[in-house]
Length: 164
Image (cartoon, rainbow, N blue to C red):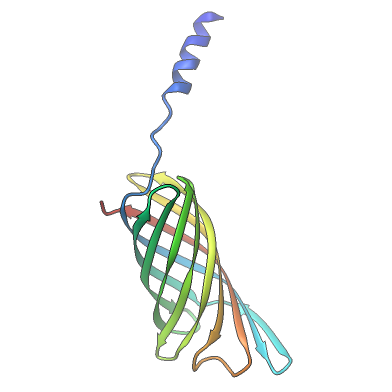
């Protein structure tokens, strides 16, 4: 029995190193979900555009880790648009992140609003793979009828690379 305990304790003490985010990171993310909106007493729910985002982040505080992020986004599938996102990311643990900021599409139409979400990241081959749930509340722009708003709920899959 003793011969099994010692190797078991050694295996438990040799845990893999945590994948703590670097000072600067780059991320590529693909997200899709549902969009709900309406105005004039009519509500609609449909699939959201497929959103591809390329973003960079820079840590502004270490404990707890807070990073400022900004990136470019492209909408595709049933509509095509390009814009950006910016905000803050809180990483209370190596495997959890919470995000808040703004999102906007600026061409060929405009639509903008707030974004908030969270997710989980796991180490994978020298990078981290993340699954996120994001809510975008779009409240203004030329693509939005007056007095209406759009809520997007997106599930995203991303890969983060340390730049430093």
